[in-house]
Length: 496
Image (cartoon, rainbow, N blue to C red; front, side, top):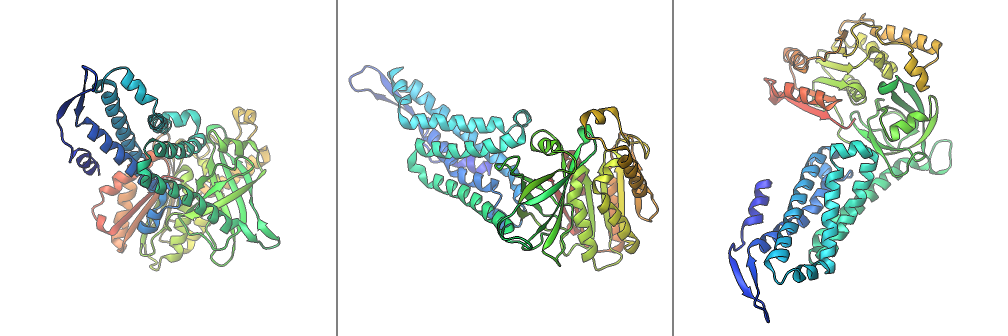
């Protein structure tokens, strides 16, 4: 793509220098190919605007065409935005040199140009695209928070489109589809939300009804996690691997965030149970945690989004999760158990957690998996604890947790301790818990072991995962070295 842009930025322009007289003056203007080049890169920046917006749409036409989940286009959206910034900068720099140096007399020629309305709009557009670029850096997002970035990015983008239109309205043909894509995306989001929440619900009258999510606080300090549970009637169930955008209107009606339900949908009923795990950071997750344990909060859903996993033709499945990425992996494992026809198919679930007590995030689900292993000997479950070197390290109450007001009562902690003990018992073949003591498991070994087992039983393989990006990089590297890549599908979900 960069090659095409470079070629079309440069071809068809006469590169020469002409000196032209100025009527009634001894001065002269210098004309070069710089003007044509500056106009060309500016026009290309306009032309790329609709495509850049298309790559950022949640309700993506590209997803409908390709089957690729919308979040995977964000990488291209970011890079295309950077290319547009470079084009806009070169356009601005070129015409600044022409009007401020090559055209005479100065400074009156340059001052007269800057007073023109279309130039003022151009300056505003350049400022806005620069602001979007700066605010989209990881440093800026860390300062202002992801929620503020997301809202400001949307507002600035719409203002940028308007400023571009005001700068050169002869290129309206690129701005109209840009605005249309923004409007269509927002409209379809609203319709999908209404499809879930509007209408007649069992036991209630016709209208818009929010889900009521119950908050459970798990862990302490930097390891604090919010678990949300609620039941809600759906027109139709989602599929394993898909996610919802969840808005908490009592906190902010302008924000929604993508979360993957760890609960498996039941195709036999409209009433579905949702479970979400949210790691507490700054912003809305901190405000959720501040509501307190056992509090309820209204929730509005939009979705589901994304592909269903595992693929129906996958005979051997490896699901790898790190931390709260387990919400993506667990439903896939349970779905694979239902869809696998060969009793000897290789099915593995790997969960990497910081502390042993993190397993309590999904205590019912882990108990269900252990129970399923008795009837499905092809299922293996491996838990790796990276920060503990022994089973009971770091479990229980501490002074810091007491000060934070999020510690459990002593009786509850004792109950949790007993539940954790039962989950950690390695009493089933294929179930293992490894305490690594400040080390991380080798993804290459996990993948190689799965591939060897899959080759023994035969069939296609699918590896899916979700968690920290460092783990994703290690897993991608391990998959890329697999010998039988033609029989292997791989998907890493970085959004969970």
